[in-house]
Image (tube, rainbow, N blue to C red; front, top):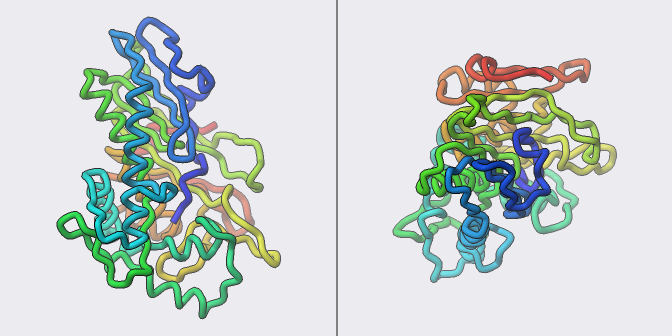
Amino acid sequence: MKNKLILFSLSLAIAANFTFCGRLTTENEVKLNGMAQGTYYAITYFDAENRNLQPEIDSFFRAFDRSASVYLPESIISRFNNNDPGTIADDDFTTIFKKSIEVSEATKGAFDITTMPLTNAWGFGFTDPMKLDSAQVDSLLQYVDYRKISLVDGKLIKEMPEIKIDYNAIAQGYSADLIGKMLMDRGINIFLVDVGGEVLAKGKKPDGTLWKVGIEKPSKEADDERALDAIVELEDKALASSGNYRRFFVKDGKRYSHTIDPKTGFPVTHALLSTSVMANDCMTADAYATAFMVMGVEKAKEFLESNTELEAHFIYTNADGQYETWTSPGLKKLIQKK
């Protein structure tokens, strides 16, 4: 699955003010920025009371990490992974788990939260990359299958204790949804929430314009300067992105992507470089952005034909190694090419 520490989607509406933490830039516009979940967050909202909600938002992220972060040893997900018998799922953990299984079923396993043993073995988790051969990958695949886990009365049931789960491909999107709910509960209905490139937009700005969000153009090297492929105008929608072009390693002349195919156990090798998915909520968009990276262009396009509640923008290489794009009809109406 993808590592969510890497930014793939840039919010143009807030990027220019990224350094002004908690600053009230106009009478009604509030811009907040900070760090959470190993990445940045950037939030813009319009509030007649000019409230600065940064302390509440920072407190929310700390509490959320105690549920869903594999980087905190004391979090619920880490305790489940370590087979702590006294661990009970909270509401956030449960919501993410149910959505994960839903997306896994819908994509026939292209999305799978049990890939953590493979992610670690390939060097995209907590350990250095191993020298893996097919036999070693096969030995790890026995621990990878979303059908081998279930949540019963708040307890994570695993067929084998070695199974470990990872919410990195879905948790940031859900955290953006929860921030949006927090704002709406306080009567704030015009906002843009960006958590590490996973974006939730609500309403139109007071001047009647839509929120503008950038989709990053794939780079050839991990440290290349960032550039935009397109700009999307959003209202009451979420947009999440995933890509293979910044997090990888090269060994013996071969490039290994961080997106692991749960069925083969190996990094994906198809031509799809970046997916951006639009949905009604950010958790859904986040999960399907990863699933499509596993599926590849053609299978993802087929999936979208029968799942019209989703829209997507794909960037991939053709047979000549040149970049090409494909955009679903609904998203094409909202997209501006750079």
